[in-house]
Structures are given as C-alpha cells and as structure tokens.
Length: 313
Length: 246
Image 1 (cartoon, rainbow over the protein chains, first blue to last red):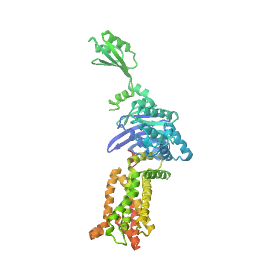
Image 2 (image 1 turned 120 degrees about the vertical axis):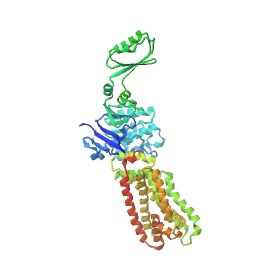
Image 3 (image 1 turned 180 degrees about the vertical axis):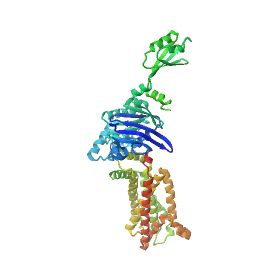
C-alpha cells in the first residue's frame, strides 16, 4: 500500500438508495496496467468518476501517493489523464487543435505544447492527419485521438474507460499496442473493460467486478490457478453402447463425467495426467473418438465460475 | 483563470463557426425589424416611425433570446462531450458554465451591436443616450445568457431548457409590448405588462431617447444587477459536475 499511486479503501456509493459500489478496496501500483473487468453495470465507470472527483461517494477513503485525494485533487488531476468511454473531442476542430486545446488546460503552452501535441499525435498514428477536421475521421481514428488528448500532457496515471468500444479490430489492436507501449514508458494505467481478450492481452493485474463488488483480484495466471484448478476434455464419440460412464470415476482425478448424445464432457483435476487412461477406456469400450479438445482455464471461465454467469449476459 | 479564458475562447470559436447561431444572432433580428417595421409603418406617425419602435423593441427581444444561444453552447451534444474532458482537467469546475456565459455574452453582444449599427444606418432609427443604452443592453445580455445557462443547470438538458426558456421569453415579450404595443389594450393590460422585465427595459430605453428621463434606467440597471447576481447564484448552487458526464 505504501508505494501505491492510488489506494482505495472501503469505497461505497449509492444512487437513489441502491448501492452501486459496495466497500471496494484496491490499489494501483506504479507502472502496472490494472484492469477492472466486469459486465456493464458492475460499477467500473462509477469508480472511475469517483476517482476523478466528478462523483461524490458515501463512505471510504481514497489516496494519491498517500495523501487524501480530495485534499490534493488539483495536484492529482495534473498528473492524471482520462480516456472517457465517449468521444470527448470537438468534431469541428482539427486533430492537432483538439490535442492542443486539451493539453493547454494542463498548463502547457508555447514550444513545449507544440512538441507534446506532435508527440501525442505521432504516438497514436495520427500525425499526418493532424490538420484534418475530426468530423472527417473514422470511428477508430477518433478513438485514437481521444487517447492522444489524454496523454499529451504526459500524465503519471492514465485512466481508460472502455476505450475500444465499437471499433474495428485493426484500430483495437493499434490501441492495445499503444497501451503496452505507454506502460513500457513507465505510465501507470487503470483500464476498464468487459472484453476478456483485452484483459488477457494487456493486464499486469486484474480486478474482477460484479454488482458493485470486487469478486477476485490477481494476475491472470494467479486468477486462473486459484479459481480454476480443473480442466475439461470434450470428446465427440461414435459409441457402440458399451461405454459405461461410471467406469471413468475409477481413473484418478476425474471429478465429473457428462454425456449428451455424442458429446462426452469429462472434468478432471488440472494437475493430474490422466488423458491416456481416459482415451484407453473410450477405445476399450469399442467407441470411436471423432474429435477431442481440451478446455483450459480462461478469464471467461473464471468469471463464469465466480459469478455463475457469462460476462456478456 | 487561465483555463476559464482558454475554454471561453474555444467556446466563442465554436459559436462563431456555427452558421445557425450566426444567422439567429445577426440576420434574424434584422429580418424581424424589417418585416414588422414594414407591416406597421401605417400605424405610426412621422416623428416616431415603426422602425424607431421595432428597432428598439425587437433588439431587446433578440437580446432576451440570447439565453437560447448560451443553453446551446453549454449543453449541445457536440459541446457536452468535450465538456466532460474539461471536467477531468485541473482547475475549478465552475469554469465550465462560466465560460459558456462569457463566450455567449461576447458572441451575442457582438451580433446585436452589429444589428443595431446596421439598422440605425439603414432606417435612421432615433437613438440617444447611447452609453446608457449600451450599459442597459449589455446588462440585459449578461442576464439573458446567464438565464439560459441557469435553465440548463436546473433542467439538465438543452432541449428542456430551451423549451421552457422560449415560453418564458415570449411571455415576457408579449407582456412587455416588444412585438406590439400593449398599452392600448386598457388599464388592466397596462398594469399586467409591468410584470414583464421587457416592459421595464422598453420604458427605460424610450424614456431616455425621447424624454431624456433616466429614472427608469436606474431602476432597470439595479433590477438587472440583482437578477443577474441571482442567476449566477442559482447556477452555482445547481451546477453539478456529474451532469457533464454523457
């Protein structure tokens, strides 16, 4: 906690009597990419808006480098960049004018401002389009400009609230690569999303949220390991009616066997090597294996296991 | 203060680049004066022409409608989203609504000043006590743009703010005799008309121009200062940063 840039402790927030953030605690360490993962309505954006001082909160504490955030909000904001979920840019201005205007709000001016505007536009790959009006841009380009406006003043902490919503895969890849590059340059990033693939790709640590609470925290590896100590073998078989499901339970590590028509799903402990025995049993029962695949732990599965529902439900 | 200046400058640029507001601020009042002046020219005498009357009352009407410009500058979708980023930046959040008041004030004042100069040149509208009229109209402009922003702070959307503002302004205009003189409709109508601030503005202006009487001017100025202060206080109390989140 001592070296955290941000520390949030027992944060609570209600809207109209309904608690949307319930005693949430977490910290953001320097240089990490902390992903807040959760479905819509989990409370991710509310937490971000509270952190940025836009929303008040009912209970709890928040600190920036050990100091109460509310007491040093202006100083905190100087070191903060925010990429909101919506495109917060002027359509009638050029890309460079947008970046320049928003960067100037952080006290930049003159040569320094011009240099940082160029650097930010270059970083998001829009330097050549700097003089073009934003209204002529594609959705992906606007998203990238939205990021440029947030990083031009070179913040210490960058908060990104679902920055890839509704864009093409190419722009999404560009944005995710940019985030990794920013992290390599030492920027701390707090990233919210409900896309598992993004979290898998960029996170150094994850907070999984649901219904206003943090339900799990850790690196993607530790979350998978802690929450998911099983794997599933799924076999498509052509059987000869000799297959006795109960016999599978004699194999070490088998936890559950289900059969639906031609699909045999076998849940087994992850750390026990028993696939050869499973296959042997299927073959000796004169069944033919048409297809076999292994479902290992993914964040999607972790979320499903923790909440009993899919992230996109 | 620097951010307030920067945001106001940007807002002013946005207003100047918006053809609809440029038309509404410059061409629309002139068209109103030309049409109503032409239609009413037989009803007025030689000393005070229809253009003398409408050249003043309809500019006051245009000034009162400036609130719609500021409401748009504050909460129009294309502006509201960038406002969100301004909220994230360091500095006082009040700069958001204050900048809309200042930029709309400068924009509308510029448009209406242009209108007045043009109308006076073309129709030779009788004007005197110009510094006092400038003060009166300037204060009215500040009150009007503040009122537009105040309605946005209260009702949270530009559409709702403009709908209500439009009703209020037109009621003031009709009662105040801006569109047609109401004094001829009897004593009751005359008494009711004093409920409209527009009536006080018209009376103060014509009293200065034709009677060299400044008593109403002082009343109007004091009233406007108090009303504008009230508008700023209500804005301060009702503005919430979270309303800028789209």
